[in-house]
Length: 293
Image 1 (cartoon, one colour):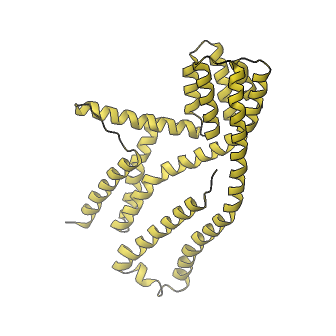
Image 2 (cartoon, one colour):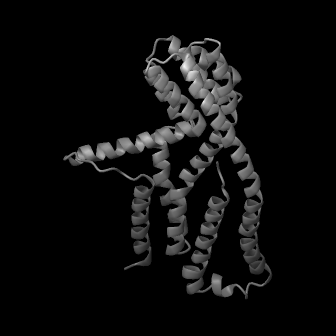
Image 3 (cartoon, one colour):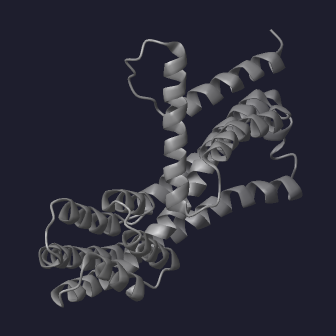
């Protein structure tokens, strides 16, 4: 079989299995194939929409899914110009890169929102102790929040509450956009309190307990970040030095690296393996040193 045809088949299979790994489906008892496909697509769109909302991006869910499909195909096609193994590496990068970028944005939003959580909880507890209503708690959170998206979320919740929308729908929409674990707990507590028709004083007691937990989480997170900063710097230096040494040797002594760049073994095995190991090392180093509360 022609090498390029085999590479194309392998790239297609890698895309299929990669998509299944990134967006795993659930067991579906529906008998029709069409219903199964529609259910699978609906779950993919819902998952993409939730991720986009947490990342605070203006993007349609179908656009994200299209990028997740087109990225591996494009990078795999470029990699195929070098070797089939590089094509597979390109497919893997195309599968992981969009999700990794969105996860990076979500982590950034979570950190910024977590910084606001103790202030918001303190303001809501004080407003509840003063006899405020649930819309007053939303207003207190919006007034105290420094992160623009957190402030916007609570302002929207307050306006929708005064517009007589169902509180359950308001808080469900609010929770779906929260990347912060602490703020999700706040929204869950408010949702339970409103659904069970608890007075704001009872909700304030629950929020006071959450405030203590949020402050403890932030202290642990800062300590973990300080301890992991040096490890990340070491991992970054190693990730830069190794490719830089290869490029330097390629420029000053091409004969030394000739077996890697000019032989079939180097082009099809050694060089792709080196790229794969480099990427794997960077990813593992980043995950190991990413200490979070």
